[in-house]
Length: 63
Image (cartoon, rainbow, N blue to C red; front, side):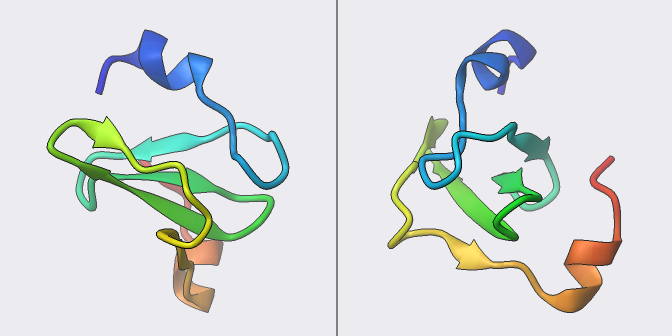
């Protein structure tokens, strides 16, 4: 995803900053420990579609 596009997006739950993880193709919200999938280049910004980060993922910074 383009960095400009990511900068325009916010977490739908807390309205916080999202970080792009290119390996998992997800947008990560550290505040809520949620990962929103990107499918076919389109971010799915629904809390029902997000997964909860594991403890290890919460402690490991996204590159």
